[in-house]
Length: 502
Image (cartoon, rainbow, N blue to C red; front, side, top):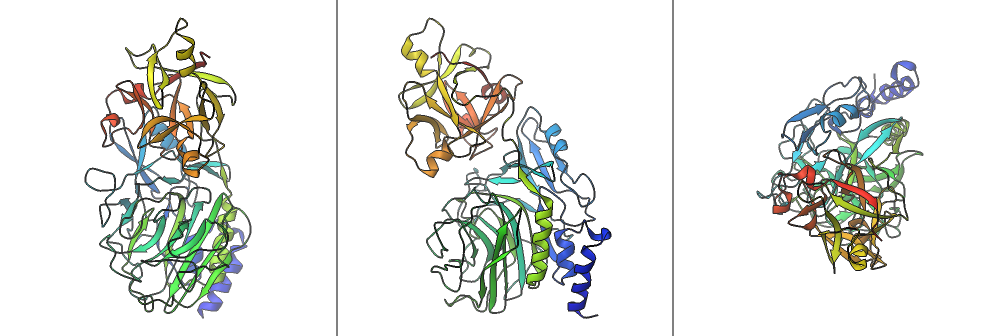
């Protein structure tokens, strides 16, 4: 049977009850371009897959557990993660490859650029930073802030040289920046820039150093090394549309002197083609020199300054047809990605005045306050001065960077908000920038020590409001800085909310 007739037969069968649950990688296989890597923390990407999707490590004892789908081909068992991570923090340590090739993604090690870890490795992502639902069932994506990233420099079956491949990813269309480079795909095995054409990866963001699309972005582009390409050159491709949807399907494919970019809203509609043509006209891209490593959230040289959220993605062998990709997009739409709550614990009311009391033994008379621009803790009571009461009171505002969370405006310095800079909490005037909005947005959850709330940074979700030597930080549980110390972490990041002193 010809590949064309085989593919047509496969598409016809998708409509029957026996293949209603066909996963993306089942569809790629039907199209003759099977997956050689399949990564997702939200669901199985094969209808028969029951193995682990990802591994989490908890901060209380550094033990790990694997999270699998609820059933074959199903959504991840988020309740198992929630139970395992209760009253502590959790990180995603492994994103398993479902294809059988063993192309698992783990913590990216140092390359041409070093990550924030003491050995130059990148940070791991929070296991709870990107909750979503699929068909109403809760799952977690991979929320990658600057400094975090995953890779596999010894992948099996990936395209090398000028061989053909395809890839897609489902991303958060609202989580991005202009830094290099939030990628998923094929990269250098050395984590160093080895020349033009040594990469082929999906890029998402607003970087304008190389290629651009229409409007102000963000755009889906291809990182081909030493250039983010939106089309046939490193210039502007007006057909490469800016993205506005909350969930995005991004696809890149390439073969001998041809490649394409496609994309869509991941919850409705069909794929659009943003570029389909020959390889870039600069030297080194025809033929390509792909090396076959796999990266997520970083550039091929481990450039780790970008941000984004990844839910699922695959890489294939061979150049997928548009028809195959269209069927995959229909499958993604049918998964019904949707947002869910980013907060838990005692509720906050927008517009209310609150004060936050420390719960660590010996510090329970201290409240989150500020002295000038320094956010700290101070002893406050009903007999304190009016000025101190105002310094320890905060007006709850809708999150400047994400309306599902909150920002905290100073009661005595209108227009100034708590934000983090170099992971210290500061009181700064709102400058109207995207960076400020995100640094000033926080998501309360049930207190890690069982009291009140722990207040998590939205854009660095491994980090929480913490008092350390009476100064306030956004701290991680066991990071490289002194204020990340594990001792008394749960107590130091738990705060009891009360009506504001002022």
